Length: 126
Picture 1 (cartoon, rainbow, N blue to C red):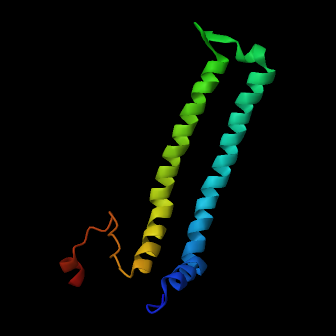
Picture 2 (cartoon, rainbow, N blue to C red):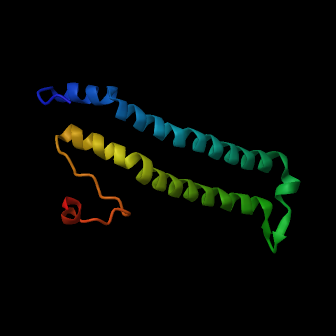
Picture 3 (tube, rainbow, N blue to C red):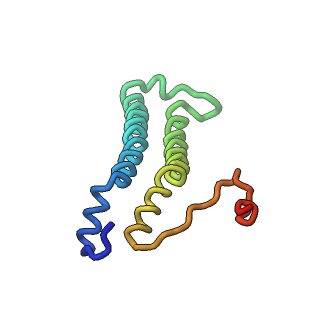
């Protein structure tokens, strides 16, 4: 990245970079399938509620019927998707975004040592 570029030029350079393209591709690879899956699940709930009233009114336990269970599962699936996204972002997206952000800010952060690498700097020098 050139240091004498204007901020607009720096952002355009980042936008054109291979790292930024990889970041967007990884984000889309998670977001699009998850959005489609959730939409299908929600549409199934709505369609069953509208057209399969007999099935949705089946009592499971006490006054709890299939419709109530499906409605509660909508909340569960929303929280699961958010949890999966947080894990995915921390593992796949955040390292790339942090690297791009640090390069854009002009700072460099030393890479973190892998947990399996237990040698100290003095041992490595020997």
